[in-house]
Length: 329
Image (cartoon, rainbow, N blue to C red; front, side, top):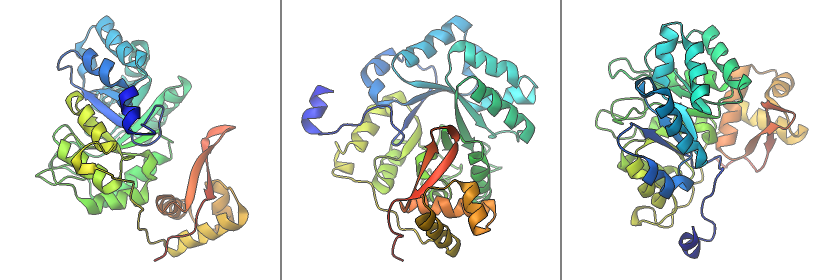
């Protein structure tokens, strides 16, 4: 990145927690030229749909190894795991992902509802193998979409399983699903509500259309996590993130305007006076229920008044601490 460093003093580097780019691999051509040129800007490749089933094991393993050798995480498409669940073969599918070299498992309910028991089995397998967990929320059918409230509730429930990334469904079309209207325009009221309900660092929006990617960077800043990017759009997206195009020239991450609820103010006061706490201890001190505390913490994190981290002794445990004053209303 020598030339980039002559223009930008601190270009983006991996590994990163924010500003993730997830590419959708449709097996449309040889990915090697893109990977060799653009690997620093690709965080995850999702081999979409049921494509892995079409490939011989050796061919699939070689493709996965290409990505892993270039420091890129590799995920299945959630639909394939849903199909395996429907057939009672999810354990075999998970074992197949491991054999092929996948290091990330995507769990979704785009077509079917997966019983809680099976969800726990999948998560336990993922954790036991040291894999990363992506959780996708949203329905694929244009005629059976979730409401905004249902999307928020499912997202909140998914966070209980501690996924590395929570993905909001966008499909390959970017039209008529979740945050998109039938023409592909972004429903910003949905985006704002989701970012208030889910810590933005965990949230990834699938944005298959370049205009959607540009609007996300303009509105939410270069550190927004975006998925379902085509190989041919990776470079264009990165120039948007780095402010190397007229559209996003000089763009910086916006400061969110968040109104904190009375419960949020109470939680903030407890953290301010008691120091670093986990959610369970906050519930004990405030007497508030889990859902109320979680919503309050999410709003405080979104407002950048509270920071969330992990306990080095137990990576499943989140710790919260105050880092700035509450935003003025």
